[in-house]
Length: 290
Image (cartoon, rainbow, N blue to C red; front, side, top):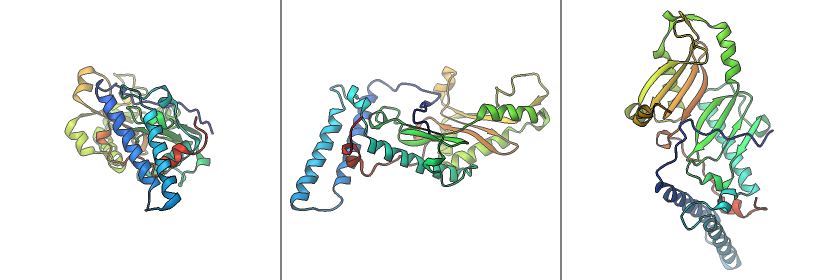
């Protein structure tokens, strides 16, 4: 298993307003600290245990504060900081979330997905998870990749061999334009988004949706035939003004109802709960830091 798989950022990777970054980072850090303290105090203790608990909580709090510079941003130590214990727990949580998503989307996976089933893994580390994007990591099976990449939430599901599949479908599925059906593609896309706990109602309220044929396999504009691979986009006013990016997108092959890609770039439209490290204090203090 390759643990150095690259992190794939959102297509619409855009830095937030300058003044929003420190506030968001500090909110995440203090929330993490609060979870750490709660994890260290599950019930009242006495005597030596109280002193040990207090010392551990103080050490964790001091550690988290040491990762932040005077400007409220992660310092160089903070960006690099993680522990093997944190990385192991992050991997466990991402695998757990991949299993949930695969079941919700009825993907052709062998469930449950275990660590032995993974072909690639990337865990960003604790410090990097506090950056403004809020990415924890991603895991990949032979057929799909699952990305916890936006505000600690699962945000993307990507087919593992998209180019190969496209070439095969293009060789075997050349349909007449009379069979073009964008409505079916839109319905499939919204069903998958809803199943994955994405806010379809809000996307339709706030964004402009459009359905296009996949440009990779349908490059001939004047062709009387097409390959039934569809891309469904939800675009914000800013996306449309700039002519770039989307808030959400789904790519699919309609004849077999195969999901190729599902992406939601904005946390506001992801109804899934973020991953929670209930024992964060112990994870950050256990083992050798890296």
